[in-house]
Image (cartoon, rainbow, N blue to C red):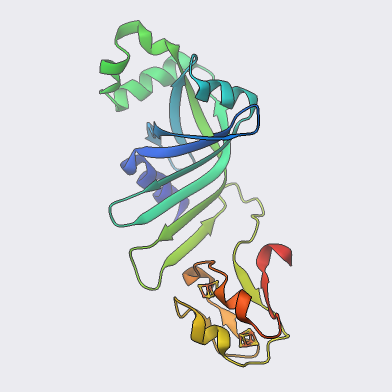
Length: 204
Ligand code: SF4
Ligand code: SF4
């Protein structure tokens, strides 16, 4: 799946969970509307009086996730960037989301501050298919932290991991290998390899 399609799906889901970190370092999460999406980012807004706004002002890091009715999950991590030309962006957001006029009628809309996300990593995770399917995307072309597990050359080919894998996504070979796009990251293979040939990809 391409980045722009993931972003459009988040816009269709619209009500997504936005996580931030507060100034005490505590995780905070709430549902926020994805107001617009283009090929590179999503747009949202929040009011200057809200704790969410204060948290973004102190620490711009955000994690966002949404699930559609087909059990496809879209997740992204990045930084919230406050947009300049705020009134223009708020007007655009209201044009694209007319229901906002009920919540913030007339000039009260300008208590809202518009943001876009500088996306560092995105993930598409489809739990509605078998085997499951996942893709990690890096729209900013940064190096992403690898997730999940891989099998190194210490593998003795016993086949234990392949037998245990709940998604049947381990292939025989020398060494055996994991089809990453179908892996749950559950760790069952990792915990059961007799020669510890399975490692966390983030550790290598
Ligand atoms: S359990 Fe370990 S040694 Fe056995 S096939 Fe899997 S990776 Fe190789
Ligand atoms: S982590 Fe789980 S799903 Fe992935 S290969 Fe290992 S056993 Fe299979």
